Length: 90
Image (cartoon, rainbow, N blue to C red; front, side, top):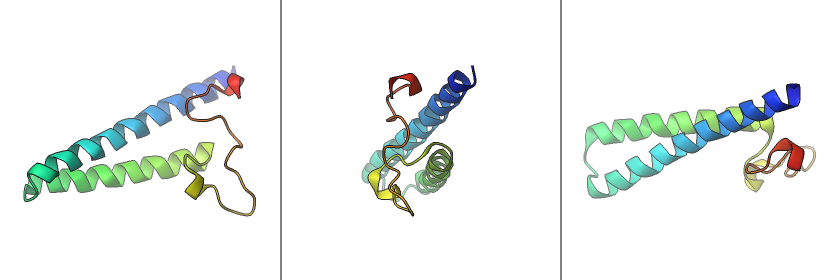
């Protein structure tokens, strides 16, 4: 039960991060066509901040999402399931 709950939380947190990254990408695309739109620039800054916070919290809880964040005293790149795997598949 605990493992299943942990996996559900992991997937929920991963989806929140993916949604935040999507918002950053979409506003970035909009800004390419409207580079002086102050409202979009403010939304972009907030979205980037939120995505960074979600990524940092995810990686602190579940481990690195990319190799460049896998450093430390030991190599911890493949210590947890890949983002697309369930824990039981790993």
